[in-house]
Length: 410
Length: 157
Image (cartoon, one colour):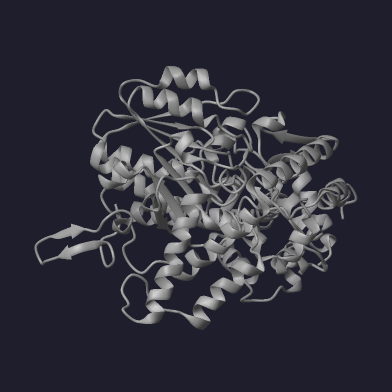
């Protein structure tokens, strides 16, 4: 039985007051809160076995390395990867995507090659490709949206050609909440020999995922959007592709042998983890995965659908509130962006903040998408495992009061 | 903080009825000696945008207009600013902009002579919104700097 109130007890921050009110945290797409088990694991590492990894002969170094590597296995199991050597730790989704751009793209792409992205990508899955395109003379193409905020897959089929070398798609839009049809995209991309990169930052935290059955070539995601600490990300890559890739950072840990004239790269995945990694963060991430597994990803997925359905229904009932993205619950996740009358999202966010409610306002690092929608900015509510129906009711009441601020001239 | 402290009547009034909103008619600026100056800026975090046009005559801001999109604070601030700087000498405008920036950044205090700007006392207490209040001022300062650089170039030629 999914007991949200019991879950809330595990998150110390949810007892905080903000501006004198109970915190209602609805900005989970930006970063999620952390359970005590994650916070404790990080402190335990520093208190009891702080040491560098993969070097020490001494006991602490061995324990730290074991714990660090244990998380790699947990991540591999979490996404059903074939092997933990397919899991590279980075500092976040952005670095993971950049690693694909420079470690793989710079080596294998050449002038005239094409990359297909979507207009709903986060800047982190656009800008690295723009930089590489400028450097190598590549062509970027973008899959448009349909009116309901889903991808126009028919257009995608017409964009894809023999020149397409990579298709980069977000699993879940960080603005619209749209869940994209990864299997259709993978099939079409592989039929022309293109690789597929999934930005999983907003999908992996809530959707039970099997990379083997999805058959994606790369998957990038971040620990901090799934109860883990900031500064830890993952790049999953198929083993044979990672084997052929170049490192992004040269330095310690990523080499087998160094002479003054040449170096031999370390094996996958260590080749991509130059420098001392975020050891405490990775260990904390392991506990975050344990926490999610204990609840069960299928249960989390169901609860999020339930809560999202409730939120969409309640928000739709507010006069003058425009919701972006699909209405069909099977096509979307718990990220809901909207505008309220002609009140600027900044003002909405500031006024809600005075009621203790944390939402995001702005373009959410997705300016091209906002251009397509024809709006400069939006408000975004994003739900996660510990949010409740009562919090949504409170959000709705607070939204309805906003207009008073403007009508009365405060 | 009370919301009415932030959304003061003056701010809401300027937001709903912006002063000096629009563009300076081309004919008015066609004298070569007083070229129309333009400056624009965006807050990359939130997408607020301000476009300013101004006309300098005898080293004074003869006219100033703005357009833009953004929140109550950014647009009201632009409107209040245009009222305060219109007719002033460029030096006085620069001094006022720098002073307002220092006040909003907490390095100076509000004083009674600031008029409508006193309405921003509430905004100063919200670090996340200070950038909104300063956007138009930064844009005008940039525009004046560019204008003065061009003047120097012209003299040197």
